[in-house]
Length: 212
Image 1 (spheres, helix red, strand yellow):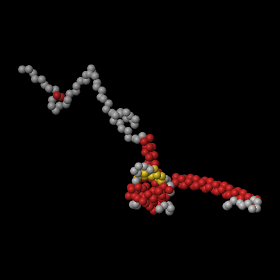
Image 2: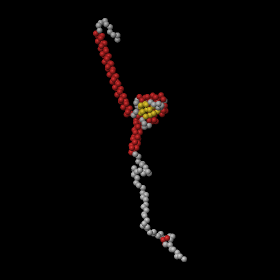
Image 3: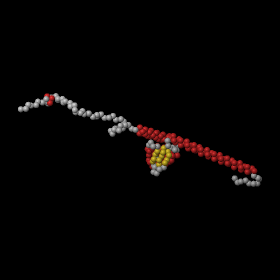
Image 4: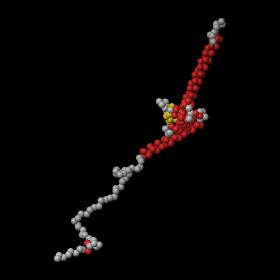
């Protein structure tokens, strides 16, 4: 009977595992580096997303906000000037305020039919027509006639003062021209009267003068 092979104590269940001898001829395996690379703000990594907006885009948005704010301020100043003007009729002030509040927004212009202006202001069509003409004559807005609906461009108070000053200078120039023409006419009449007096004084007796 062959002798029975005895198991090593380390190989028995519950025993201490036995150390294995290191084979010097076996190559060592290098573990891969699992640390992700550092990604900068301008990295081309496909998973990188840029959260900082462009400076040009920020400047454009800031400029647009400033423009809208300035337009709203000009619209309010325009409405205040109309409401404080005692030479404007109540219907004209009502139509202007309703048009600016409901349709001007921050663009400085209104495009609407007179029927729509009558609806938002609560006045009839005839009053709207007179109000539109009155606001144009008082230089509160310019009118561009279009098919269907006209465009009304609101004139800011500062620009309106410049327009009135320019019209005043033109009116003064026209008055000076008329005064010059009147002086020329007076001088011509005076010469004619002097010639007439000289003729009447020198005419011989018995000769009738011209029928005046």
